[in-house]
Image (cartoon, rainbow, N blue to C red; front, top):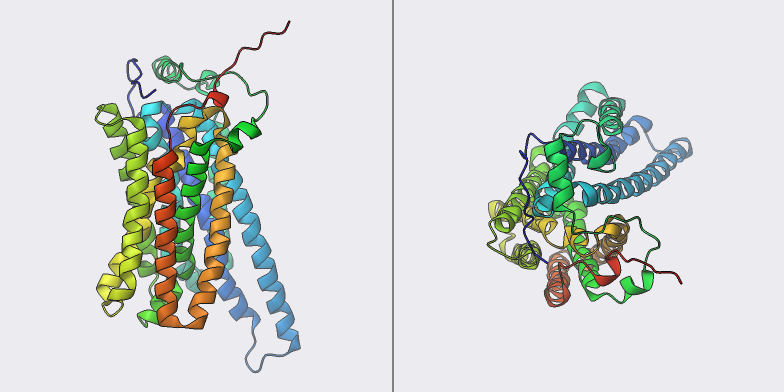
Length: 401
């Protein structure tokens, strides 16, 4: 099943499919900047709402309104972001040749990390220099440009795109010829529930998002309480993990497809290799953190390496649904993200509880627990993960008597 398509290759970075990848990169960049900008602007909103002097009932009411409204807005942003992110996999199921899936999806996905890096660097500066509304004006305008590009350039499949070259169209269609292209009749829920390779992917998502959510949510708290550094005074420092994550995402995708295109490793071996690196390396860094807390430099390096190495999973189980069930990739990606969301909720709650009991032992238990969850996900994926199209995801010809 790991056969190399025998087709003449079209130019890569000058091709339309790579243009689509960069537009999706821009789309993910826009979504994350708009969501994070709300978290940055809320501080300025509260400060502008509060008047000098003691806080009274008249100021408590608008503050409560702002926080409640911001929480609802963030939830709406996450919902929309999840739908857009999973919808991209429907497009890649028809646009990404098997030997280029890691490259294309990593280029697109790295937009979220790069967007986090940019908004953390400039969000506070914009708020101070121009006022918090300009954060929304600027990144909202960027979102409008992104929508215009999306509706103009993105098409469901290469067959109906008016600007694609004949050579590239033939390359994509022939490379995907051995996969099912018939329309879906129904979602085989029962077969999916009994499919262990799918559960391996879901478990990988759960483990991956457990530690990532802790780092993203509690990074400022950890640096402030352990290193005695006010993270708000150092936007560049707080954004470094995200630029590392974006870089590792792209480099990991390039390396994965290089190994496949040279026939150095089988597809399942590549998926398990990058899943192992993306779960094992950040776990080692997390376990080491409590023991190097006295060293500022070492702690910062480990905090940067955790999201960076964790994003190597983007070339592992993150895109594995495109291998095992390309017809249902978008639906399964939505389910996978759901498992990641559940992991994020549980890990955030558990972290808050543990560090509230005792700061020193609490952080140690948080990182040890995260490493244990990662190891469970890794062992489960290595045991049951596959890269072949599952029987229930293949095209069937029905004969009616």
